[in-house]
Length: 389
Image (cartoon, rainbow, N blue to C red; front, side):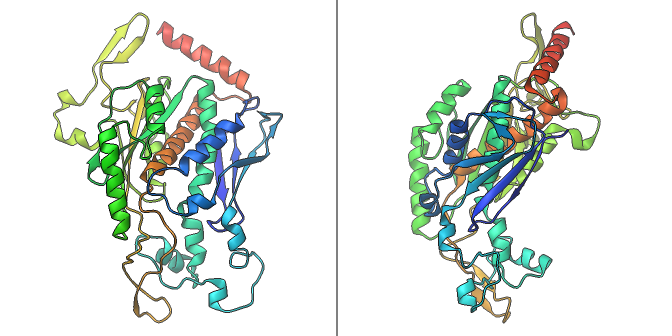
């Protein structure tokens, strides 16, 4: 069975819900680690007031017994504390009253799903679009990814993420062991290991917020310990790098993705792009460099997976852009919903978890079984095959 999930819920509704299908039995879950990942998503310099209201924790309400998965679908709930202020507006029952009581939205915000969603679904209250298209949904995706992450960790696969740049400020990334990179960036309010760049980023975010504007950036995910051969070259939709790219582009406000050297490869000759292959009796086959970011032919090479995503500035601005009232068709400035000046540090956490999900999915496709014990046996046999090659 393929690993998959669905999420449901609105940004001001009672909760976000996710159902995961395809997890093996006997995976021991660390609930504290799960909630730690959710709390990481809420941090970062530039976040708005919503993160002061929400204290995200995941409740597992199905598929887990006595701390271990049973093989049944796993149901995860993340409650919205802000719901108490929206119980009338977001009630599932019919409501009487005027548009003010319903907080109807009739002025679409540029850069959001508001107008497209209203036109597509024939909705005259754009709140029905923005409530679901909100980045609040990424809390559910982080919860799902955090469980996938624990599956990967069970087999020695480590996941990390950090910020590469915010606006025009780029951080130097020291060549640190992955555990050390995690430790250092976790202490930074903008998730960088470069203290000088950290200060310039904070100043840029503060200045941008004062101006009523927003700022974007680039984030990176690194995954180490992935065995050779996840994904496949035989069909376009089985190439793991392509699946990861689609997942990254599905994150709210992400407008670009690159793997390994990425777009820089366009500016170099082939001799400076491709990774020479070597062999060592202990390591087996390995690459002398990792410009390919852990992939060749849509399959993992055994080198670290390196994925970057570009996040645009959040389109909800406190100096709103021009829009058009869908009722009168007259020009207005777009309505303002509460927002962040910069969510790039949080986006790095979301990136980690959507990439971890895709890697876990490919891992189970390769070594899948109904229990952790069966997967362990399958992986052991495959690693023996690689050693004997």
